[in-house]
Amino acid sequence: MIKKLSRWFSASARILPWREDPSPYRVWISEIMLQQTQVITVVPYFEKFITRFPTVESLASADLSEVLANWSGLGYYSRARNIHRAAGLVVAGGFPRDRAGWEELPGVGPYTAGAILSIAYHMPEAIVDGNVERVLSRMHRLKSRDKNKIWSLSRGLLGEAARLKVDPSVLNQGLMELGARVCKPKNPLCDVCPARSDCQAFAKGDVEKFPVKKPRVKSVDVQERTTAFVTKDFKVLVTLDESARWRKGLWDLPLEVKSSQNVYASKKDPKLQVKYVVTKHKVSRVISLKYFTHNAKNSSNQMMKANSDSRWIRLDEAITLPHGASLRKSLKVLSDAIQPQRCRS
Image (cartoon, rainbow, N blue to C red; front, side):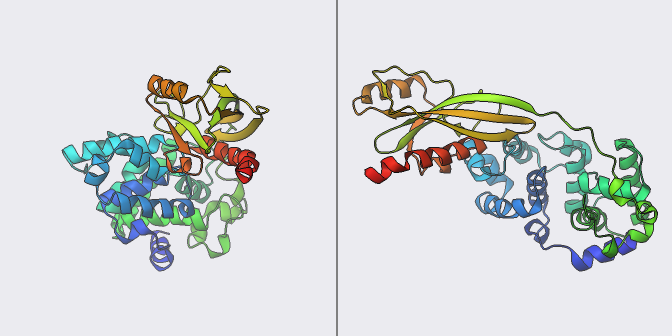
């Protein structure tokens, strides 16, 4: 199986930017981006990110706000905060050369450490991600999602690869590639699978029963209220809340803002609504649209002083700030709502 898999991967592997130069830095960044994100989504973000931060030194010396801005759209922003922190540690102590050292870095777990060491350093380190788990579960018709068993099988393949003189980088990337492109969760392409003769689930005709399904995680409904303050020249007030659970380091509309009539004027005070998802949380956001009065400049300045992490920015420029789905979707409905006002201006 290992020889067939390595020949298949060498002949048909996708051309990906981090494979062109599998340095520890580039492999690390790609693996962090690929956590819970598909390859097709990651590629343009990786290329943009590496263009701006070509070395770990350039990443470590950058402001976190700029790192988040170059991450905007990928989601799971704790990943960006972790790599920024980790970059500083790497600059101080060098890239780790063993699993324990990598796992000490923020955001790096057993899978990521194994992937970096095997791909960048060609070390015989096992990996288990969703793709590898699916391949091995089907090959052995595993009746449970026993992580220890999966890791043991992965390590066993590395031992066999060493005997056959197959590069650990080729083996591990071949397993991941097989799971992503052939041994898919639904409608697997068994007819073209290089490992099908070794697959117990294929022999039994029940491939799609494996791996056994995880218990579904119940979603949590969250209600959120915010206010969009818009000026006559279509600037919007945004804030940076470092204490926010989901939006730390990201810009958004101010939450739970109260205004007095002598500061803000409302024109029908329309209520807009957006929905977005953060991990298991389904968030419904209600936005109150309030227009800023022409004589509220002093009050505006007072608000800005009270919260130094606030700014007025043109509606069409706000999306350039580090942001998440909450601001992106809010700006879309906000822009649609005030379009008639713009047309009359």
